[in-house]
Image 1 (cartoon, rainbow, N blue to C red):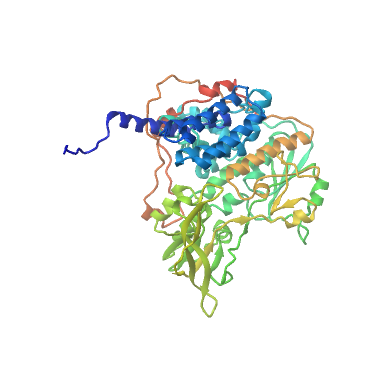
Image 2 (cartoon, rainbow, N blue to C red):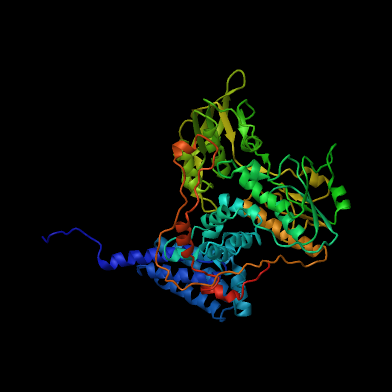
Length: 616
């Protein structure tokens, strides 16, 4: 009998593992705008290379699928080819012996269903329907289209005021986005091919920390047009539209129902994440353009309110930019008990400096989004004895940013994952005593790619508590607008892609009231789009100039280098107050991090975009 040996990876295996890591990074850095049919063919070839070759469906079938897709891309395909692709992939799915085969075929069928029009365009026109209009990944994924490589280069040179000017060309809330943006721009950063994405938000913070927004002058206003525009809602979307419209020469009046501007930036984000004085820096810049504001003024049909019809009479255009300020109910027994509070109510009170008293209380937050994390971390700072988070899915499935979840747990919150709320228990006086939850087990994958929880075959679980905070989403108050004749579907105002409300001339809408609750940067982008289209509607075609000269590309080698992460105060100390705890970069850190940018606006696909425009 021969001796056995301990199996150890050889050089070839180790190299292949590194190649797999390289491939993963390339997939992560895959930019928007690629031909989906071409990309699908590449994935199919990879799947074919993984097969063992024992069964015909994999060995032969996947090869035939490749040939058919190549026919489509080479302009040799026909509508009959699509039928053959459908039939071949279906047969492989039904007959392949292992997941390599049937999942590869399933991927092809999903592509046929999801982007069939791209296949058809290739067949009928002999080319791809994709047009590269903004191939720089970070810029393409920024809803406002901010020139990110440009301001990163400016930060590297220490030209912070110019960086703020360049950001403000497309986003008049640079401070807000530097502190609380969810940074979708980092998702496809091409730097991922080398190591990890550039810390774009951190570099933006470096700019606004060293050149406060309210110290950087705005562009010169265009000559007055004599036109007047009313904006309903003084949040980031409404104020963004107001900023650009004023720069174009139109006079803007903002109607805000609360006693302070800022919308969800003020009434939905706690001070430890976004200090009120930093919010005011951005607001002051908007107001410096000449925007007129009417606070404590509600648009509606009641006494003391101003009607939409009157606004349409008095103004040349109206932009509706109300946020999601109404709470959603869970729909369980005991939800009306004393001690049940909505996230909207809690954060609104904190925004008004009317702090709830949680001293010595046990609090349970229901939900798994960023708002739920804000409530959790605020409850800790409000003196709660214990804070828990009840979420019906797993921690990995939470929609909150991972750093927000990790931060809440580090500050002492307990996570009750896979626990769906069942009922709220109250005493004889109606005060909350416990939240009963249904334990779940993770189940099938849903249409969004998340594992769906199903009820576990175990008894209900009782979580003792004094306060239950419901953070499962927000809604839009649209009743008055519907009564005024605007089309409302599923709780949102029906507006076209250019922001104009259907069948109502001169009325535009955007942001949360059209899309449902979304991020701050999406509201800002909606305000920017609305401003441009209102300007066109009024008979003009203004542009907002930007006289910032962007540094030339340097030719330093881009060696692998770790990403600079923003540091935070120690969890045990920061949870004692609402003071901000995130620390900005040092000059050394910012220079190094900015140097990691690959300047995709000049290299790679980016060089197809031509010269950088000075307008949006």
